[in-house]
Image (cartoon, rainbow, N blue to C red; front, side):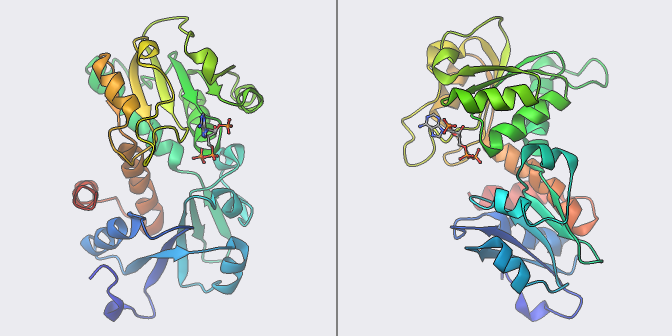
Length: 290
Ligand code: ATR
């Protein structure tokens, strides 16, 4: 029922998520029912791809109109775009690609939009109604752990919202490179243990530390977590990582990685269909499939 091939016709818009491995992807479970709910004539497939450029050349049919990109192809996808959104260009990776009617491939990175929206929502919920129209991240000290694709996305997103960004990474050189691009400070993950220039900081984990199956690991000690008012973990398997459990115990607001996934799905849905996302349906579908 997920892939209703009987409904395929000459006007059906084909979408897919490009990754390797791809069997575990929740995206087809999310987009197919969402397309159907708004009567959008589209289908969304899991695409196990080894070589992105070869794939795009082989399936350059105008029927293929939208792709999501996941591990490990976000950078390869970036290199196949004809045009790239300015933020995606800074990040050096894409998560969404749209084939325009003229055949040109447009690249976007919507990961950071999802993550930042989720963090802002968490801050608003913590601080009560926001006082004014500005981002609740503005002026805040925002520590991003990790400097890979997701780390870059979060750091640029934080900068865009006016946060003071600190990049903490195992490899200092990579932290330094990213921090200099966002006008922030660079430290090592080890140094982060004793880094607390102020209280009420915001923390985002983008390293893979604590991801299934090594769920006993955590990128920052519980002792250090007391200096943060909100902690976000980009990991979503498991939903409740050790980092988030300990942050909760320390009194911080926690934002799950699933929120990043949900929020970026809203943005992608709107790019694919040109229609507003059926947000509650997407949330419910995802809850049923996790
Ligand atoms: P993604 O696209 O998900 O961000 P990535 O680009 O491979 O993935 O980046 C992985 C990030 O996790 C990097 O910041 C990496 O640190 P290094 O730059 O030092 O490699 C971090 N990371 C991965 N395993 C780690 C570990 N065991 N301890 C600390 N950091 C780790």
